[in-house]
Amino acid sequence: MPEPLTAPERARRAEHARTAAAGLSADGIDGVAVTWVDTGGVTRVKAVPTARLEQAAAWGVGASPVFDAFLLDDSIVSGRYAGGPVGDLRLYPDLGRLIRLAASPGWAWAPADRYDQEGRPHPLDARGLARREADRLAGDGYAVRAAFEIEWCVSLGTGDDFVPASRGPAYGMTRLTELAGYLREVLTALAAQGVAVDQLHPEYAAGQYEVSVAAADPVGAADLAVLVRETVRAVTARHGMRATFAPKVLAGGVGNGGHVHLSLWRDGVSLMSGGPGPYGLTGDGEGFAAGILERLPALLAVGAPAVASYLRLVPSHWAGAFACWGRENREAALRLVTGSEGERDRAANIEVKCVDLAANPYLLVAALLAAGRTGVAAGSRLPDPVETDPAAMDEETRRKRGIAALPATLAEAVAAFENDRVLGEALGPEMADTVVTVRRGEIALFDGAEPGDIVERSRWRY
Image (cartoon, rainbow, N blue to C red):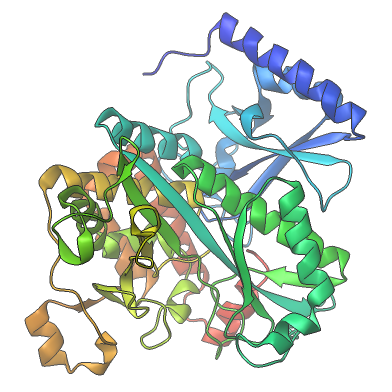
């Protein structure tokens, strides 16, 4: 067991919070939203008045562990380690990530680390697991830079039906013009919160947009995935509209992805370029990518965790439905992004395309890092790259090349996850069991449901 929080550490946190609270109060901030993401991918919150921030930082905010067993409709399942009315834990706001929320005046935000009542990290704290996996890589001399792409759809009004707020051509300037004021406020709100936006553009579906932010450390990237979504949600509501990040918004539509970009570094040098491997990958960079590719079927139980995820994850829709990789291949589940000549030493990365924003970003980061670390340690190598849409190949060609379809249902992904020793060890028995319990609960929740029903019941939950 890790050592519990000490009295000096609590005192240090209290002093930090005292100073922070004074600054917040001077800026008219009355409350701090302290968030965590549950196993099913929903961001949950406990809020404290600014005057109580010192107490929260030193001693945490009480919360039931039952949230780990919530399903997307707020029903509760019960597993070996989660579910039921008994027990308590503490949410400790990470004041190093404290942000004044530009789109929610009078509020600040901080992500939570979750501890038990003895002051030890809670085994179901996904943020802590992501930090632990990053630390394991750091212990071997590696660092990872990560970033989430955030896709969302905007609906006119506040009703439950989806009514696209823009209808111009896919990726068209018309689509930006239709919502220029709204999108400008998204950019200004993110900038006011210190979020470095790389680009924002209309996506394929009507009313759909994507924002890409600069890479950060793995835990910081997951924090940003939460902050960006809640900022977009708040700006959208201020404009009298509704935003959804669900994997599928309309049964016949393309859905929202939540692609993750990762690059491996050592001593400030990228291991994704300048090496003798395919397209310039170094041996360790290739091993990192190969470790993730090998475990994609099991990773889907974490990264595509909803029944609705598999309505999005279909061939020839740029969702990455086949377990293969390729340079700039947007139909491969793992896309190698080399960047342009002259910037590859800092721009090269791998993009995991088969995941979506129903995922808990901290849990997904932890699982991806564990898979990549295992590949590095084993000296794993990538198979031959795929340079076309694998769906366009006949089955015999795919078989000869070892290109398998990824799980087509959540049940298939859960089965792969249960049989994956590496992910089970990395996440720990408590988290691994709870992932399976929650996923099975969602499978049962939608048993026999038609795609349209699945979409309608999950559209506004993410």
